[in-house]
Length: 83
Length: 83
Image 1 (cartoon, rainbow over the protein chains, first blue to last red):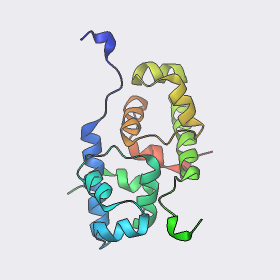
Image 2: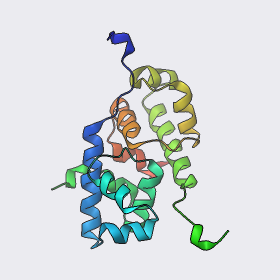
Image 3: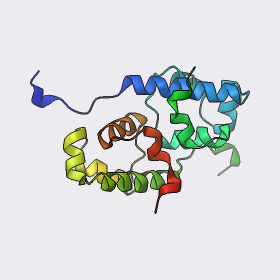
């Protein structure tokens, strides 16, 4: 592979951190994945896979999660709070 | 359309705010869209459309933009700073 063929690559580490933080905030709100799914109209499997870092989710999904978790979207990117 | 068919909807307002904030941070770093494109390997047209709120970008793209704009990803969601 030539170095010239290097293109934008997914940041797997970032995606995993986002998933961990999403799970942390969801649990701190006392919600199950199923409850968050019912609130957001996003399927439970999609939420589960996002929390596991298996889905490179969209910013609109971030907005939806933040809305129903009652946090600011930027708080979902505060990875310094991941335990 | 029955209310039962309502599903997850894109948050267009949020996507537009993200685009405005991305543009603001890019300009504050003194970078053109072309320069950011060269750094990130994301096409200039995709960056332009993201800044216009026409693309519901992924969190991995957010990570890439943040990295090359030298800000924390959460700063790109600090919409209180949009002028």
